[in-house]
Amino acid sequence: MDTTARHRPTDRDRALGRLRTLTIGCAIAGVAAVAGFGVVAAASDAGQTATTVSIDSGSTTTTATTTTTSSSATSPTATTAPVTVSGAAHATTGASGR
Image 1: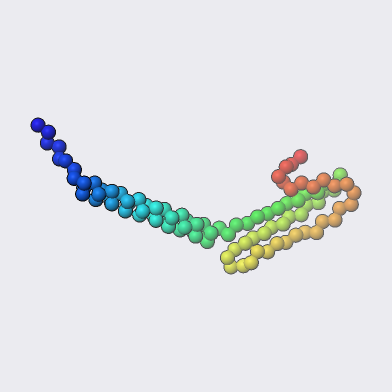
Image 2 (image 1 turned 60 degrees about the vertical axis):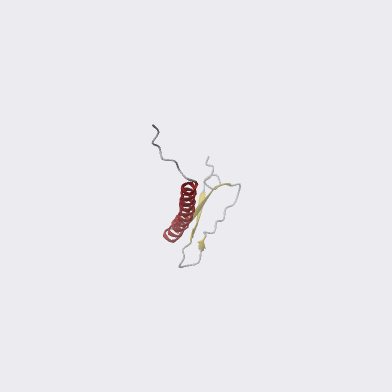
């Protein structure tokens, strides 16, 4: 004898409604989590970049460093060191060394 309960169409409709509600809730929670992590990341690390240029003109090497720091409290600033070299020179930015 088969004692398995038969499901009615209304049971199916309620199950699909719960699934739809759960799916929408997960999507909203995911978007909120990504936005929250983005806000925390932006607030905790404003970032810093540094560029070093090395100029080798045979026997003399001159190095200039530019550092830019950005934060929410101050505007971005940059400082550079003037470099004067006479003669043939080779410049590298650190991306490709010799």
